[in-house]
Length: 195
Image 1 (cartoon, one colour):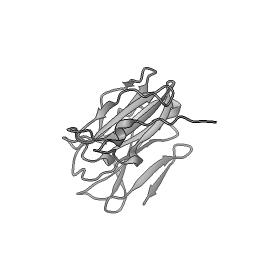
Image 2 (cartoon, rainbow, N blue to C red):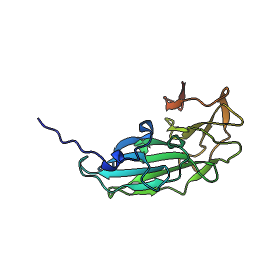
Image 3 (tube, helix red, strand yellow):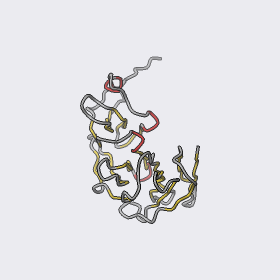
Image 4 (tube, rainbow, N blue to C red):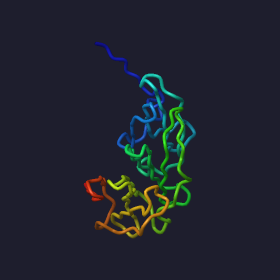
């Protein structure tokens, strides 16, 4: 038995890839998809995606967003039941927390449901917010993030399954900004992990 291993070559360029824990792979619309942070020469912290029908031959990179303050300021969630790639990021200029979701297509493009939606307006956001994102078992997006001035860990839930409207954020933990993850359980319940 033999295997062919393929690499996305510009991930190993001298300028380097971003945080591997912010990368994501999934299979949709007959394609393998890979999202990753990579900073090519002259472009400030950019998040990209590629697709492949066979996992060996890959499409050209498509830039989703550039100018991220840090790679940690973008988070992804693959909503397999609804065939949606979901993203949340910090806008580099406004510092607003944004959400967007879209449907992967079999030609390697993504049909976005809408322009990015503002979830949280700047306030005293965001030095190192490290947002995390998931959808609950009822299909509603949730985002957890850290605040600098007001401090602590906050969480906000969408009031629409497409993420077009959002509720009021609530503070769920103390002070400081910590590594964390939110994960869906059954019956709309969520698990929050803090490290």
